[in-house]
Image (cartoon, rainbow, N blue to C red; front, side, top):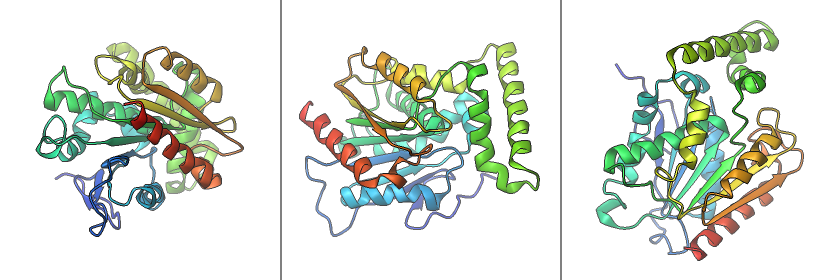
Length: 292
């Protein structure tokens, strides 16, 4: 039996992990300067009541756009087999792109929003899912990809402490012992998984996602990117992110922008700086369409 979808008020489950919220029935068709579809790839272990705040923010900005949300566990991002990660994102592809461009062949204007490394891993999985459904020569159409607190560094030994902390944050409430014990257990688990991957010769999910998101054969260069981050992020090192962005800027995307937030924690930029957060996304969306 497949797992039951978790309760997600206001959304219709498309699977146990993908949810749909339609635009306002009273709203007219999306104006040509606004997205028709927004897809949010939530952070690892993000609860619907928290992730939905981002959907609410987008709905306020673009009331006629339909919004899809993919929620995933950190363990699914780090340990789920590649084919299962891709298949988990197929409901997004089959809903937004029943044809290579959109419903009935009409062009979609898509905004993708990836949160933390888990969101990044599954936006990459969605890109691969699109190619599996519509052909290896096709690339998932989107105007703007917003990367919130992602990507981080890819050297495992340097990042395992941050990753184990992220997993402990999402699971410590289920255990009676101190937080540090939970983190230590995840640290040991991650090292074991990493060594097993090395023995099997498989690519770690974070490295795979970073590669796929930047491959010209997978990701359309006719799109823009926005990276949202802070120096106080306890899980994603700002220097790692800036190094990644510097590389992405050489790859030929329409535009690659960044926004630095002051004092905000991991995926906490919107909570501390809502006006700066949403204004920057709107600004980059408009620029992406203008550059089209």
